[in-house]
Length: 151
Image (tube, rainbow, N blue to C red; front, side, top):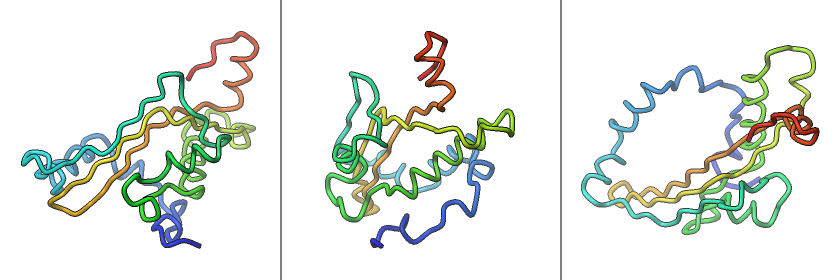
């Protein structure tokens, strides 16, 4: 096992979606020192990647995935592990579960749409932010059959 926090923490033990709603997200943004860094011009933009040819399937493209799921500055310290991706997939499956029959066994595909990395100099913190698009196996079948699959 690595030294990453995602290797040490069981993310499946708590559902954070009910404790961090939109209001509390913005309160958190204003309450943390990162906002002060930005106001004082002490936030360094390191990298921004937008997949203009469509999102990248992070579950099938292992080499590119490894590069995109880690920091440019400190790649061995800041990275997204398979455990985090599995938690995100599990959360999506549970939240999209309209019928309890086969939805939970449906494959959920994660596509990386964009990545940002920042260095908040006053806080001595580097952050990577990943934006994903997801769809289930059922939506994939609709798309192949000419139906209205969404991305």
